[in-house]
Each structure stands twice: as structure tokens, then as C-alpha cells.
Amino acid sequence: MNVALAVALVFVGATVHPGDGPPIEGATVVVEDGRVTAVGVGVPVPAAAAVTDATGKVITPGLIDPWTGLGASEIHGVLRSDDRDAGGEDPVRAAFRAVDVFDPHSQVIPVQRAHGVTAVGVAPAGGLISGQLGAFTLRPDEAPLRPYAGLVVRLGGQREGSRGVALTQLRGLLDDARLYRQDPKAFDPHRFGRPHLSRLDLEALAAVVAGEAPLLAWVNRRADITAALALAAEQGIRLVVVGGAEAWAEAAALAAAQVPVVLNPLENLPGDFDRRLARPDSAAILVKAGVTVALSTWETHNVRKLRQLAGNAVRAGLPHAQAVQAITAAPGRVLGVPALGTLRPGARADLVLWSGDPLELSSRAEQVLIGGRVMPAAHRQADLLHRYRQLDPGR
Image 1 (cartoon, helix red, strand yellow):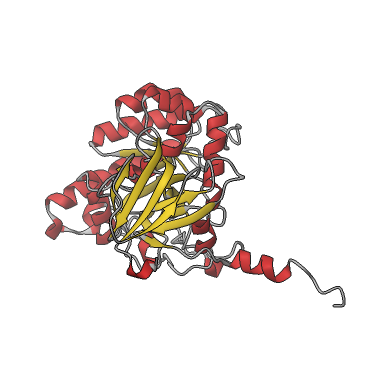
Image 2 (spheres, one colour):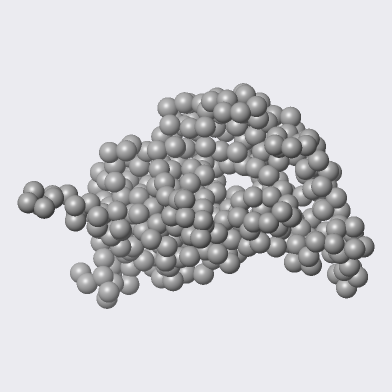
């Protein structure tokens, strides 16, 4: 059937991982007008539909990496192509927005998308307060999912001075933002004793104290995670722990406070003094305690390896269903788009048809849909492979 004339896209006979529940064997998925309209066994197929026989194959929501540089960094080592760091000596860059630098036409995006990644968070870098993380789909014609999905801060050991100074500064900035929110017209940076603090910085901070955006804290050491939890409770703000090498040791406290953790399960060795307690089964420990865990590559060019990370988490004890959730529904919740990363009626039709288990590296993404549209599989790496697969021996 001509897909251009089809009312619906239908996949029949697949094992469906809905992202927020157990897999469904032999299921049918119906996509209409960019949304999932039906998922289940024995679902009727609409009259006008393009039907794909997915027997023996697997369908998941599109994969989501919540902490990347994708679309904000093009070439490693070429500083003019890397826009993640606002630069300068001012440690407070709350007004800096990833949405202002994200390039939906980046040459780095298609290869990640061809490996099943359909959405990402793009995180600023540098400073105490790095800026505003944005959430984006990898379909170039779509608007950002959330231009301001959270405020990025970096805590822990410093090259100079005490790590406690960062917490002191952050506490003061949040207090200032609360005052600003009470009376924006009275804004005067000298009133707060910080002449370089802009109105836009205060507005970004005010969204955190108002509960409109979470504080995404890059923090690894157990004691620093405890301090961040105390700060969040004191300020009444939403916290997300990112990095979290030693978060497993505070699993009970994180679960009680309903604080999600974003981690990379391959960072399982004590790389520095903030990560002495790192271990490979941290994701399994946290999930067992009731903590929402999302996985991230922390990457730009290798975001496509996200499913490999999930597979390693399974090897270290994380149940398979929870591993799939950690790269679909869980990061969707972290980014503030709760239905993202799920296959339920009414959800966005961001999905991937896999040749087999997506956590097995031998499997491949056969179709990738974003917003119900089938994405092209072509990308620059494949073009180069085909071009240079066979070299002319005479040259």
C-alpha cells in the first residue's frame, strides 16, 4: 500500500516494550496522526493502513539520552564548533540556554537517530551554574520539547577552594531568586551584592524556587549528594542527581525524597576522589530501592551507544524491563515530558522497530519513527563507509 495515502501505520505481531511496564508478546501497535492510538493483542487494524509484519521483532519507544552535547557540539577539538560552555570567569550562567545553540540539522544527529535515539537533553557545561538544559526530538522540523527542562549546576571537588563554597553560593543565589520572585520590579543587582547577576539569571533561578524547573545537580560523592538533598529540602526545590557515582550508597534517602538519578553504568571505577565508591551494579541497587534511574552516555558523537550501556546495566543485575525503562520512560520523566518514552494510547509516536532485543548489539533498528514520521536511515558515516569500502588499488 502507498504509505503516503495511508491513514495509519500498523505493526503486527511484535514483542512490545511499552517503556513503563512489562513486555507484550504478539502485540499490534497502531499509529495515527503522529500519535499511538492502540497497543495490545488482538487490536483491530484500521481499514486504510500501511501494515508491517513485525513477527519475531521488537518495538520499543524511541530511546532518550537526557544528558548530551548533541546539536551543540559538532567536531571534537574545534572550539568554534562547540557551544556548550558560555565561557568567561563568571560562575553563574543561569541565563545561558541550550535551546539557543541547538542545531537540529547537525551532521552528528542522523547517525544517533539511525541507532534508535529519538530525543535528547542537551546540557550546558562550565561554571557553578552552567545554564538551562533543553529537551529536543531528533526530527529537524519539530519544535523543542522543553526549551527549559532544568537548571544545571555542578557540585563537588574543586581545583581551588572548598567544595562547600559552591553550596554557599548556590544557597545565596536561590534566596536572591526567591526575593526577586516576590518583587521583580525592585530588581537591582547591587541590592543583592552581586553586580554581575543579571535579571535573566534571576528569572531562571526563580523558575527553580517556584518548582517550575528542577535543579539538575552534577554530583558524585556520597557526602555531596547528602548535602544536595539537604539543600533541596531546605529550599523546597525539585532535585535530580546527575553523575551519581556514589548515589547507590544513599539509595534509601534518594527514594524517600523521590529524587531521580541519571548515571552512566560504565563509569564504575573510582576515577577520582569524588567517585571512590563507584560500582557496576549501582543502577540495580538504586532501582531496587525505588529510585527512578535514567541512563546517559554523557556523549555527543556516541549517544548511539545508549542501548549498550543499558545492556551492561543488565549484566550487572538490573532487570531487563527496568533497563529499557531507564533509556525510555525514565529519561522522559526527568526531562519533564512524562508521556515521552512510552507506548500508550495518546502518547507521541516515537518508536523503534528492532530486528531483535535492542540491548543486544547484534540487533539493529529497522525503522525509527518520530512523531509518527518514518525517519531516513541515511547518515554521513554510512555514506563514508560505502564510498571507501573498496579502494581503487591503482590509486
